Length: 423
Image (cartoon, rainbow, N blue to C red; front, side, top):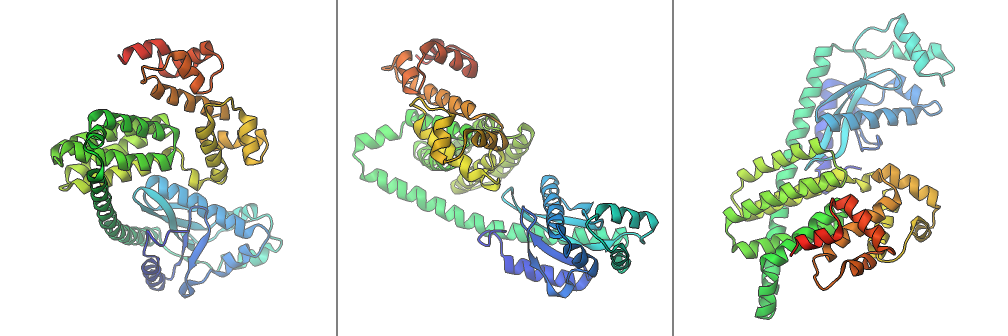
């Protein structure tokens, strides 16, 4: 369902109620699964739709049409017109906030032309579950017919209205989150004052900042949303302290970090073209920013969108299981774990887990385990006291030669060469 904390749903329903009364069109709010939860009494479902929905699979057919329309409207970020699976003309207006799709507004139950012999023939083909075609054709003949110009105008009006509502809610949300950012930084600075001077200085050098940066980018590549966002908070505070609040310096470093994060997101599975568009929009926004908190807010937003684009686990059917599997792997990579161990932890079969990983992450379980181990190995290689053999063992490889082969494949150079490049 659309999040009531993000959208003033009551106000949206009032707007749609008035729109429905003015146009006589049926309007519904649906979530990304195509499930309706905002249908208004002023324009109830037409007789044709009620008849189709009363048949076996009729509601499922309707929901599938809504889901497809919502996906397409969100993809193109504009009203999407199509014919539903029962044969009627439908359009969907996307509802999105901060680059995240929340659902859509569906407007339907009309025709753009007078029904003819070919239309009725197609209706029969689209609705084979209907046993009384005479009744279905009778109800279809009672549908309202409106001109394409009027249909497009109604879609444009609703699209503009919804966008203005989203912008209003986004402004409120940004102000709240900017304030929270100020409070976090203030609290972190107060905590630093309580630390011994030597410890505070040690945490404020660029070495500590770069270490946090590497961890942050690694979490983005792995699609670890909670750790990436938590690490970003620490990173931004370190940046503020190290720059002494110099806004020009903060803006420069934020731009660099955004570029690095965009590349990590692509490596994590996000579409490169989409990421570059988001990065360009981000750079445009921070050019207009005047306060340090605004820089940080937009950076947090960008990271959230990147992570949603690369994994979107919360929006997928089996995201919970895959997320549990990922967390188990992140905690257990140093041991000799295999897909059977991960599946046993979740009480599902290895074959089912394998299918979920391919569906949700487009990789195998072993691929993900290997990716985690290599990422961790890169971090450990920065510790001169550890030999390559020790690093290999620490990240779960039983064979140093196999570790060298896998490391070279993912990083591009042998472990020893990479180690020497750090000195």
